[in-house]
Image (cartoon, rainbow, N blue to C red; front, side, top):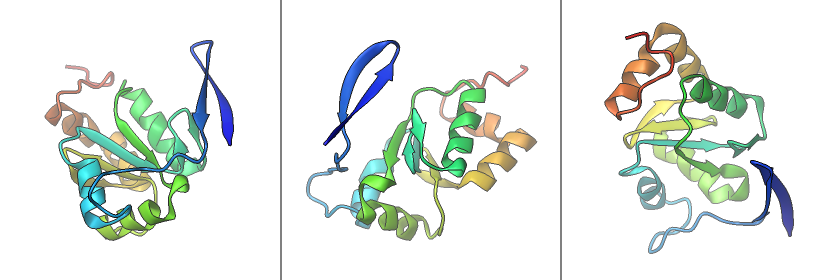
Length: 138
């Protein structure tokens, strides 16, 4: 099954049943999740995609990242795989989604991202991975 996605006025087709594949590790295992976050500046495990968030909390995280001008990051739609959905919760020992990882380290979910955005900590965290926030007044 496919769904049509429109971006930048260009049509392209995305398989709706695509699954997260990482060789050598069972999907959703700690090794699999580790491979998905290791060596990456910013990774978001969310319901839906950045272009089409499927829950309000995922949408809030994406909106925060957009406010800071962050447009390049890895994202994984946990609705595509129950194994990954549960696996990331086990990996981080955090029960809710979305989940944000910076430099391979678990940062938090929506509530933590909102707090970091409000108190300016997110600007500092983004600086650590060489991303200059649009909200950085320096």
